[in-house]
View 1 (cartoon, rainbow, N blue to C red):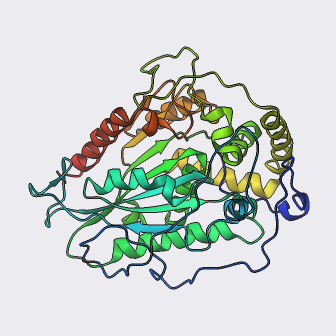
View 2 (cartoon, rainbow, N blue to C red; view 1 turned 30 degrees about the vertical axis):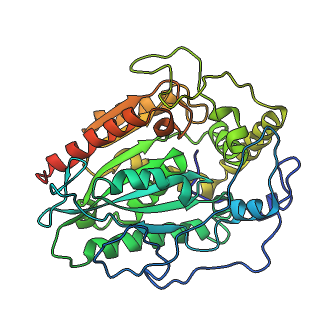
Amino acid sequence: MASTRILQCSSRHLRHSFIPGCRIASRKNPYFPCACRFSFLSLNSQNHSSKFQYNRPFNSPPVSGTARLSIPGHFAHQFFFGPYDASFRWNFASGPNANGLADGIAVDDGGPEIAVVILGWLGAKPKHLRRYVELYNAKGIHAVTFVASVMDVLSFDLGKKLEARVRQLADELVSWLSSESGRDRCLIFHTFSNTGWLAYGAILDTLKNRQDLLEKIKGCVVDSGGDPNIDPKVWAAGFTTALLKKSSSATYISTEPGQGNHLRHGTNGSKILDKEPFLIESLMLFAFEKLFSYLLNLPDINQRLTKIISGLLKNQPMCPQLYLYSTGDKVIPFQAVESFIEEQKRSGKRVSSFNFGSSPHVDHYRTFPDLYAAQLDSFLKECLAMEGKL
């Protein structure tokens, strides 16, 4: 789901909802979280000897997907404008188990302190990233999550909301890496869709003059992202899927024949169904494609996106990269991902990948949990072994 930039002319082009049957109410009293560092961070794990303060965990209302486009008022408000509290937060691992290991990763007191930065897909909430947080925490790795709402993206040029939040996250990471803890500290990034991937590119752009910090990035996992093309069809598919969620045809497992190391059946009991787009979905895709065909060609927007994508193409840290994608992804074209992978390999980067074949967009872990976890575990060991940390 391509999205990191907001459209400078959005306010005048988007005063009325372009989603049929869905009117976007304006927020009369916008809430801005306290800018004081760490004051809004939520810690879900226990027994952590950090200076960070514990806050209440984030609670978001349940969302149920239906065949119709039905968005309750309270959900629409949170979806379009984002949660009222800070949408990036720390989740600290409790430490090694009795054997001094956390799921095969060394985390003893003399080893490095590792944090993963989980950058969510468009419309994701912290609760949607919880399973990934738990996966990393079980390995003794801290996790900080970042999510972006639809309005974060649409208001990017006007209020610079998303840009400011990405910069704030970058500042947070700089502070954590620079803090004296008696142990070496390093980062791993785990991005979802093009939203998370482009947010990663924006963070790299912010840190481009801090080579000392870039060297502390030990690996990057790209889940369902990595399309370097500024394609209105991809943006349209991303926004439509974000709005329709489980009602979108893009969330159904593909039955089309695959190639390479693809898999045909999910291991979580999911049914494999062919799902044709609903009429409302087709209309939304058409409307969004027309909209983004115009907006993405505005010079300032196109230049900003080109700058970020160019950085991801040419200036990524010299750390291993893992691309997790599928032929059945109906949002991000797998051909574009594979092309980008080959380009990274030609530039001398250490790149690995796995094609899950039938699993939907950003749904590989839920569809193939054991295989996904195995791919991730192998990659983490490779990242840390290269640095002599294991």
